[in-house]
Image 1: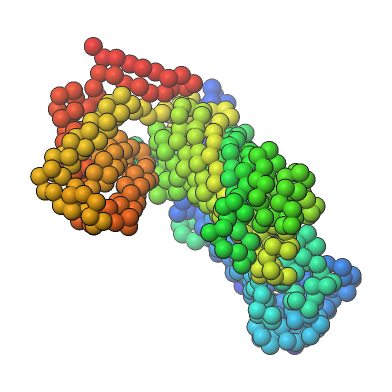
Image 2: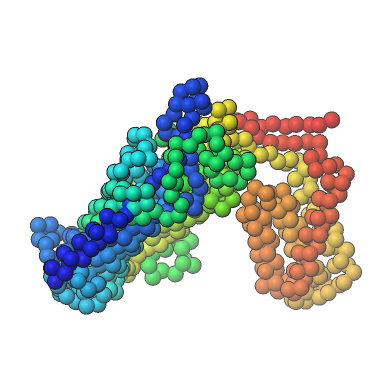
Length: 614
């Protein structure tokens, strides 16, 4: 079997000779852009659908349960498998990768001596049941390009990455979270193919090695560790630039485009586009096996959060975030975090701390292209880190995902609101709360944030050379707030008058027979009038605003039917009255006053501007 493994390894290495890492970005010779001084690290970013790659190779892991001698990892904790990954470089400095591993199951890669894989102390059983699989998410940071100068002819690149993921052990039908760090080396052989070498260390929950090992491994902070070593090949997907890698920056084919939605921008430097943010936080802890309807007040905490981050491109950024809950604003009914028997003690001992690294993907810029004037942005993020209960003095892995909406107030200041969901191992909220002794009984919790964000320095994403030469600063769109408020109030007023007249004419009994004013629904009429006004004012900036308005109005209508105050057709008629009232009001406003009206209120820089046109 050893000879067969060696042959398979040689085959993969030979395949690797055909492949290479091709992180080739176009270099802009911008000597004329900065007062005659050349800037070496100005590159053209080709947008979301460029610079994708695929990796495949062999993997060896060295399992090391807590409390065991690492010197005995051969052969007790050794396993072999295959790995497959798909990733993308957002810029010459940062990228992301999703990776899949399948260990100890495939022919020629089995290990009959895996005593440290569940079921614990039963070598061969894990292999017979299918081994184990793992799915990871990595954030790649190219150290050469981050701290040095980007060179498209560089053959060797070294990247480091934080990692978060999940694994599942078929040997005991249990899974666990895992988190770790690693190093990726790539050696380019051609414009498209590279050799790869990976080494990472992960921590994972005790459920990964099986219940039989719990007494020896512990849980939560006493998690199991394992080293992963991989070698393989990488191929870049899509078009490879075989021509001049130093195009004339004045060439339209390089990156200039007159289209406002063109995704070609010049990537920024390491010190550009940083931001800080701070806000309030509410978390809804929900230990495994507990009814979510009891989250308030048993699992509700309040706190503060702060973060510092950087946008590497208009689409992708990284953020470091800290969160402190139940330390300033106590919840004396908090039964679902340790210590469960004394809810007040958690607050007395300092509450809960969370530290995470987050990868942010600006979905608005991915889908619609980068537009500096845009005010509303929707961003998705994934986070990985640690959660610590200060009262029990331990930390556990945490991973999660969420959505964030930001609204820019001026050139530097923005408001943000975010909703995320996280999971952690059982000790993350107190061992006794989950009812399970292994990590498959993980705890989940919602995290709701809102606050302010401040951009440090100027915006450094540019769509063309001329903008960079002139020191282009990001403009901010304005709204005629007085016109919007007046039209919204008028729309609601017209809807109120129309529903009152219709109720008096139709005189339909309510479902609960309380009176004869059921048709149409006045609540629905006024709610949809306000929603339509939001739609007309903000649709061009963010589709989520009108969606939220219509959703709220619809929810109100459903509640009126559920409470037996209206028939369903009363609500439909009310919605029609409200939307029609808004359309009439806005049409008359445009007809009589013009779309600009006389008063305009907006923001610019750090000031609020009010303009009156005579």
